[in-house]
Length: 395
Ligand SMILES: *Cc1c(COP(=O)(O)O)cnc(C)c1O
Image 1 (cartoon, helix red, strand yellow):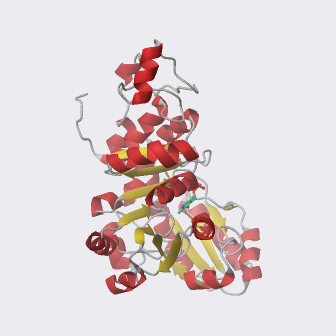
Image 2 (cartoon, helix red, strand yellow):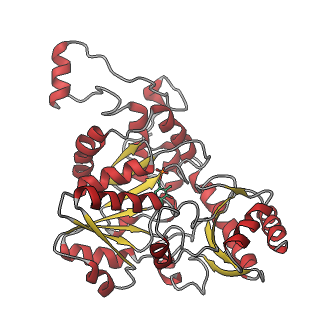
């Protein structure tokens, strides 16, 4: 294989960052299950620590299996460099702490992953790094939330769990003018559906636990961005806070990534079929899916996402108890948080992923007590639909 040849996405998910000829022909990458690396002599150790010689030192600072995954992810997200973390939240916290110091301010999309909300609160309480939420519905709307101390704009799109979208091109335009770093949590899309760096954003974060892994057996995170910034993160908030990924988890993610494009196509196809069923059921109040032509963000979806994704949120007519009764009637669809797995999963944000968010903030974010989030799996869509219908009809 020619060095540096750029292949298409569907090829890079399988090959990028690994060459079997470097590893005795092993088709799949070896797992370097080691904590440390031996030096040939004391001087080599000195040189490696001084950064005068390339090579591995200790697996918190770098590991060959993890490095393969980082190289692959950097390419898939169209970035210069990637870093792997022990969880999505380890990635979020390493990036946010690298970008801020006491007195700084973060503008965050109106609606964000529950633990990211918790982290922002902790940063405010303990370190006086403040934040404001913005719907980012227009340039003016976003500019209004920005202060002289704003160093970071943090965006989730689609927003968890309301599925609202933020126009990334608009955000980049505002941020560039003011010299603010834009961080995007791209977990809901995976690099197959949306590439924020290609639009001009600075850093992309993934909870790799979700679509990147795809099989519900790993907790992991990734961050991708410019080489200089990622090197700074590697040497500071990653190394010294220490939320790194294990070689075995990196190996599972390299394996999961191979099927990312075929999985995403199927997730999206299934979701699109279920959206029309849900929208027409008398017990369903509202369906939130960016690929729905009637959705207010449909134009943004067409502009920045390859397909509308595998997640659907919808509200049930009735109360919190009606929503819970519906979940309890499901047979095939499993009640669980997380998303992006082969199995279809359903969760109740108000009492699960967003229970830490106070009721008042939840309402502002649009998370009602009857809202449910469905992560559409890879099963036959007819079977998922039958299960949803059975439970809805019982109400
Ligand atoms: C799950 C998730 C996270 C956190 O990731 P972990 O791997 O659970 O730490 C962050 N953002 C989004 C959008 C998520 O879905």
